[in-house]
Length: 237
Image (tube, rainbow, N blue to C red; front, top):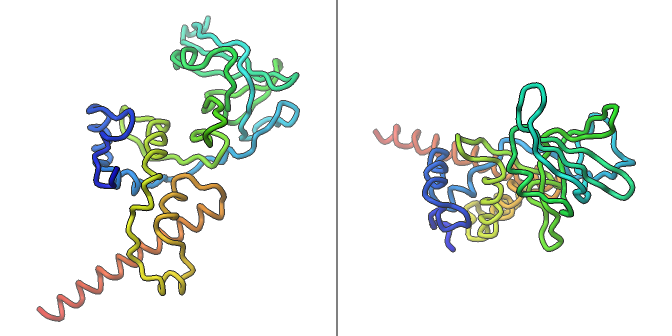
């Protein structure tokens, strides 16, 4: 696949989703790669039940013992609750208004749950956590890592954008480096392709910062070049 390919060539992108992506200015795979996160959530810390602290932002890895969706007795809203076990410990996960989760996740599934843990009289719980089945063949995309967050439009979720981005970043090597090596060396900048990969899925804070530094430099450099071109054209006028 080339960077010029339409996003419809990516997995799980039909005409409806393609139209929604177009609202974000995303028409091609290259457009997608240059659609950068506006912030990140740090879910790298994977904690067991014995390590949990009230109010801490963590990732919990465990096996689902029970999961069900029911209506709350007071406001009659749909509530999905799961009991997730890790060793001898248990944690509750609760989602409001997302009944599909009890169809996606089943008892016996090993999962990552990421969010801010709270404690009440019944024990620890996560309200509305991000979730992802454990897959030993793949690095997590939505949990247990530095997770990118993107600006969205109606009908598109963070999970959808990240899933598509995980397909696009493997093509980052096709992005042409335009900044001369001498300038990169003088400014201590990384190359463009690894910057693109790391801005979306950094493995560390240092990686993310190096990517941000390179891309901000590019933006400023292009702005200065444009200003110089305008000055030169005014001189010739």
